[in-house]
Length: 419
Figure: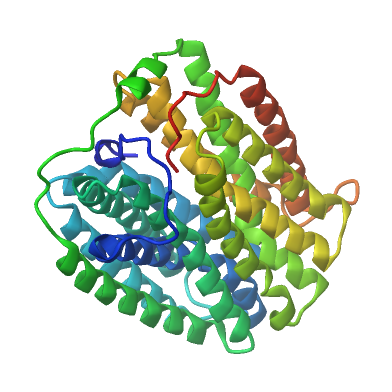
């Protein structure tokens, strides 16, 4: 994650206090929410519900799908490392990145069966870069604008856009699952382009000159203290494990469901559930656990995620797959926010290096998941296929790291923890 995101994160520790943002900040909140819905729900994760449909249509194989997914995660890492170039004008970077998401999504409709896999790999990689730029630039523009208006707490609403975007892409592919996957890519591309235009209009309405940064409170400064290097490395490992653990169901849940029910109107429902759980969990944590220890919130999220990755290993039913979607979808954004906040708390003097290492570990974990599925191959061992063995590995690592996070947690600061 770039320095731009770090410098843009709200430093105040107020919590979500109202049911909806006041009118004066609605354009800013709407801009961030729509941007993340497009960038993450479509640019990053639309491939997940479309993968089984593309396999059905013969456009690509399951193993090639794992490679395309990995290309997107590599692109996302590259985007996060290069987004600092937009530090002086994050709004420009936001609009450029959303245009890129729309164009790469539309271009996916041109990928046909029997052609070279390189165009698909390139498009998924580029979509990852644009998605990361959008995430960084939306934070870099929206959060300072909210801080200037003394409405930092409204920033929680922006991150519900990730889950809402995932749910939107899931509903489109669920309802239209009997169409060719190429038509669905086209429809999602039109949705992404519409979202980019809406963000342009909202950002123009809500733009202003930043006159002051959000202040850090004395209580927050006193509660935070640098931590030893060995503990920082442990946090990096835990965050990398989180990336590895969530990405297997985030990539393959609809494919798992398709083996149990070939009707897309049945197996396609898992992804809308995943996104809806992600959106609701962010709001719930911001509303009901504002004072909780960040590390223990992270530990609980990682533990529940482990339950989600373990369920399909032992219960091969659609209900188990749906429950897995809720458990994993309902925790991955909570773990993300808690981990990033903990990095800042752990290194209040200069959190950028720790944040960068955690981001790199997370990206490495994301890349390792699909590649491990690919490496194990199509065979079965002890009755489990590649997805099951990868899921079992993820479950074990998630449980171990969740236990460490819980036991090693420091007392929560007296001030609320921002979502």
